[in-house]
Length: 154
Image 1 (cartoon, rainbow, N blue to C red):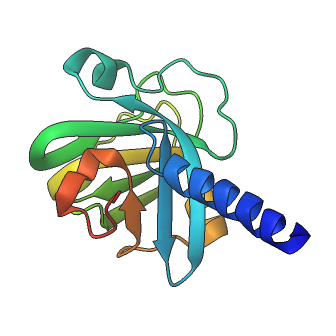
Image 2: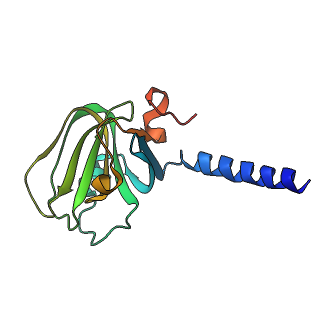
Image 3: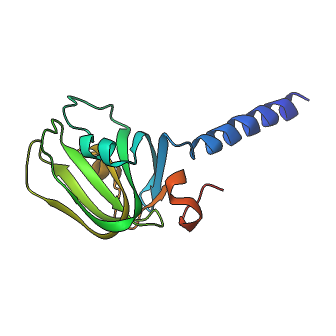
């Protein structure tokens, strides 16, 4: 009976953790390098996307900002008024990382080109993608990618 109870409790916690992976405020990435999760703030309108992470002095290590667009397009970013170095992961409509820009320089006005077909951009602390080994081709799990996602929230 005790073993059954422990198995039931483990099953409930595993299911709860699995369900949490597809919360709007969480992003999970996976690839040959492993798997990692981030707490994210979703910005999905012109006003919040324009503000982004400007003027923030810090961000917890496994946190980030997910920029979501209405349709895939050509994404370009800059670091004006951004005070912390960032890694930018450019994602297609399937939730696949198509390009990574590591350690964007705070305050730099140089355009960072994410390329065509970008539906979302995940900004995380600079150096974290390299630390974890995140590569182009990694898959992202988040409700923003819907049924088209390679790693869908089913």
